[in-house]
Each structure stands twice: as structure tokens, then as C-alpha cells.
Image (cartoon, rainbow, N blue to C red):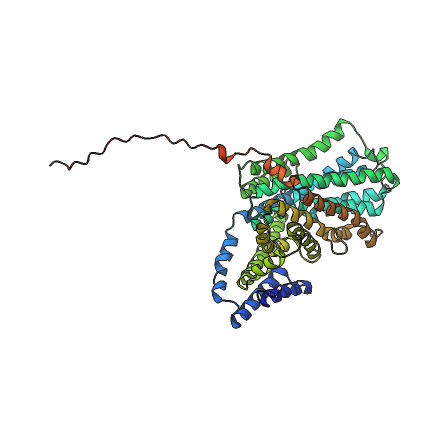
Length: 470
């Protein structure tokens, strides 16, 4: 425990105490880092030369091209969230599935997955679907726990479905290409959607009274007009997402370029739907600026903390503790996932990615763990942070827009089955790594042993070394 002195454990404990006290994370990290840095200098546990590297690290953060993708994808999501696509998708898809028991629940899951790829934020997805679909589900006799649970859970899929902001941040912290992280997340995100749909299907067979079909008058006009409405709301958005992800996967664009293309595509889609206005642009820009500023400040705080922590041999202390866990790789993975699950009660995914993940990477490399698979696994685990009562942010968002007739206890109890399904996905990814790695290795590969270098020989004319004649 104290193989590298008392300063690393004290510094880590100090960070946890500041977090639990409720201080802003970015400034807490800076305060803890500078305090222990000063204390280390006074006690000869730390050298001043480490702090002299801070300006260069700050410049590295500001000039990081990869992090520039965050405001682009955020702006794309903010435009598409506010231009009414969610309303069109939910209304049309709900009518399309309305004939079968649980039809509205199916619609919420499908639209939640699409909105997750479009908006990139859990709050936007949960609030949009809660405002639109929750009153309809209550009106037609849906069980309160089922209705609130499916809305909150389908909103959290946003964390995992590309182009997720979480995957961009994890790629930067793990030192892996964003395109590989996106490809690796395809399998788990599809599995999560299928697990949710299968649960609704089984529940509709066991308790059909909890999710009755819509009456004919609520379904309205069917046939081709309804299908056309659904396609008009769904296909352009999916084409935009596929275009962004396709250029990334094929290496035709960097994450920043793909994000810029997505932002332009979102503006075009909003214009095609006749909803592009200057107030919409201003609101999207304001939301993008707030999120980007928060990310940069957290990253600066994490840089100060990690620099001092490494100077105190904290990274070696963490590596020593985790590498000595019983069970080798399995013991490390179990400990990390349990730790992330509980620390997510108090920390946001940005904070976990910037503070905790860099401490885990050296141990993962030492245990020969695929970092893309490890990053996707952490992403799957971190999405549970939005669902576990009583701290889940998705539950807070839903409580804010739900009618007073729905008790908070109903929201909490309704979240538990969906939280368990998310944990099932964590177990699947651990036991079946191919769910992540298959999509990465599915592309063309080259066997290095088959590569031959044939360099043609060039017969140069003989040099005339005789002295010049004058």
C-alpha cells in the first residue's frame, strides 16, 4: 500500500474527498494538484521541474486536433435535437408499431438509438422522448415503471452508439484511433438494442396488460403515408450518420473533419425540414460553447493533477496495486468494472475518462489487454451511471419532465430491470471480446510475411575520376 510513500495515497484520497464535498471538479483537481505539489516540494517528495511542464501541457490540450471534434459533434447534435426530428420520429414510429402490445416501447427504443447517434447527449434524448411519449404511454394504460424505465434506458444508449462523445474522449486518453473505437462499439450497441427489444417482447407475452396496443383512432391513417412519414424522419438522419462514420472507418477523414461534415449536414437537414432559423443556430452554438468549455477546464484540471500525481510516483503506485490483484487479467477486469460502476455514482463520464482511465492504461498494457476492447468495455460500464438509483442523471432528467402523478419511487423501481440488462451487456463484452474486435478485424488485412520488397537495380555509369584538363 505504501511501497511508494504516503503521498500518492493521500493525494488520491484528497481528490475523492473534494469530489464528495461537491466542489466543481476542474477546480478541485487543480487545487489538489497544486497543494500536494507544494507540499511535495517542501518535503522533498516532488521537484519543481515537473510544474515547469504545465504550460507545455496546456498548449498541447488547446492545440489537440482530436479534441476539436467534440464541439463539431456537439453542434451537430444540438441542431438536430432542436429542429423537431425527435417529434417526427417518435410520432411516426409510435403509430407504426402501435398495433402490437408494447408498440410504443419498441418505438421509444428504436428512436432512442437513432437519437443517440444524432444528438450525442443523454439529456437531450431522455427529455425529448419523455416530453413526447410519456404522456401518450400514460394515456393509453402503460405501466408507470415500464414507461419511465424504457424512456430512461433508451436515452442512455447515446453513450455507446457512434458517434459518441465518450468514445472520442476515451480514444484520446487510450491513444487509439477514433475510427477503431467507433467500429468496436457497433457490436455492443446493437446487442444493447436487441436486449432491450427482447425484454419488451417477453414482457408483452407475460404481462400484455402493462403495455396495451394503441386503439385504432390513435394510430390514425396507416399504409404508405405513415411509412413515408417515418422514412422522411429517419432515412436522412441515418444517411448523415453513416456518411460521418463511413468516412472515419475508411480513413477518408479525420474525426475533426468528419465532425465538421456532420455539422454542415445537420444544418442542411434542418433546412430541408423547414426549421433552420437564427435562434436555432444561436441556441446550438451556446450549448456547444458551454459543453466545450466544461471539457477543456476538466482536462486542464486533470492535467495538473496527473502531472503532480506522476511526479509523486502515483502511477507506479496504482500499477503496483492493480497488477498484484489475484486472478491476473480477470481479477483486474472485475475490480476495474466494479470500481467504475461505483465511482460513476459521483463522477461524470468526462471526469472518469480524464482522471481514472489514464491511471488504468499502464496496467492494461502490462497485462496485454486490447485497448480498443478495454475502452469500449469502460464505455458500456459508464452508461450504467445514468441509470442506477438514486444518482442516475437520466432519472433526474426524467423526474424533471414527468407529471407529478408519477412518483419518484416508480421511476427508481422502473430503472432497475434496465440497469441489470446493461450489466448483462458488460458481462457479455468481457466473456465475448469478439463482440468488439470482430468489427475492427472485419476489414482487409495484410500478412506481413507475404510482403516482398522488389527494388530495381540501377546500373550507374562508371565515374570518370581523371583530373580535368585545362
